Image 1 (cartoon, rainbow, N blue to C red):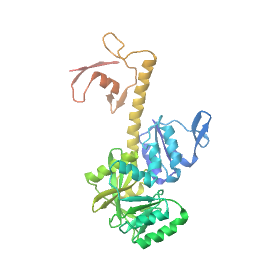
Image 2: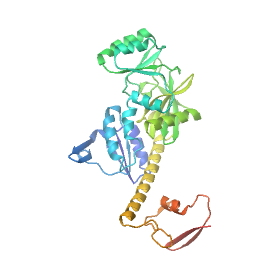
Image 3: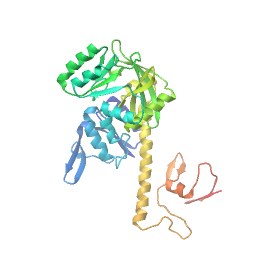
Image 4: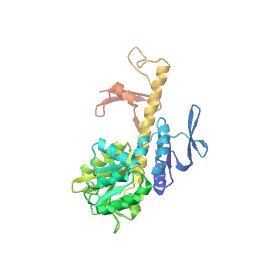
Length: 361
């Protein structure tokens, strides 16, 4: 199978591509900045360095919030033909803090109290109702950038006056006391494969590694893991980092990062996160490819006018290739459903060269 990772060429992406080569037959590293989308007449096409993008069985696309719209359009066009671990809508949702809050709230995921204001006058009215300290930030931004801490109403008003010249919405959020720490849980599929606690640098409230924070391995309890996985599902990202604050009232989700850095979590946990991601992408791609093959076989039979049971004795026939893994033969799903073979049922195998018959015992 052939796969690609489309990214901005970070070290994390390079690690993931290298890990993917242990599973896929071929893996291409594609620079997101060299991607173009062409609409000409009734035709839409994805171009890479001016040429049509190759076909891939699986694609892991990621990048910063500046490329959210491009990533959303790109993955929307690729989803019918390739496996993608991140839904197209996730790129606009996860890169917008307000949209993230809306999705998490709709999924009943615990979060800090949050307010959005579009003008300074409205923001000043909200500040009258807040308990201090508070957090103020812009809807867009990553790695702790654009996040401000106000320890009093006077401090918050000063920040608002400075922000007035930017003329953009501001998010006002309650401050959850965690001794300047937070938790990054890396979710892959239905599991939290690694987690670590980030401790902010002295004099800094933001615990992000990119802002000078340091990390230490942590084992999450079942409740926190469940919240992290639910947050990833709400955003529709099968691979992501979920930032969690452990306050006095329990864990709350701060945000979801669909392009998480791997250096910090790998160093702190000693877990090969890149390999876990690569393995997951491979397994999901393999399942999708097998499903596509089965669907195409069914469509071929339909086109030829062949019914499900083609013989008078009720026997069906399926022309396909064999799936051998570790010298074991895996039956297509259509056969296991039709025959109702179960994992624990006993069967009689009759075999000779070029022929195999399986009958329920």
